[in-house]
Length: 96
Image 1 (cartoon, rainbow, N blue to C red):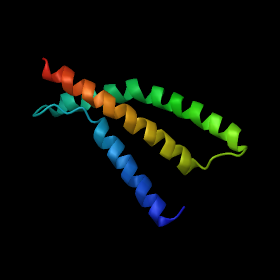
Image 2: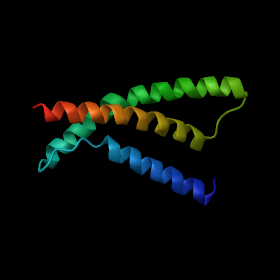
Image 3: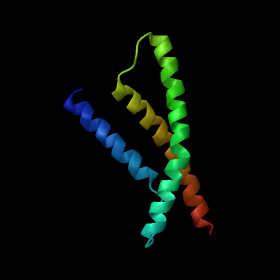
């Protein structure tokens, strides 16, 4: 894996972790608890979709995918899901 690929993968991971944060102003304990609860709820679904997609891609291609490609697929699905989870969180917190 080249340096460019390592940097881009690291940036994708950082963006994923950034959008996974459930922020409550001036309440760091609530922020941490909500973020951990959210990750425990959402990560299994994203992993399941990733496994399904990777298995289909491996059947079509006929070869195993490299680990960095699998990580990129996970992060792609994760970012898409986190976008919608974030909108839901923002709307639900705004109504309290």
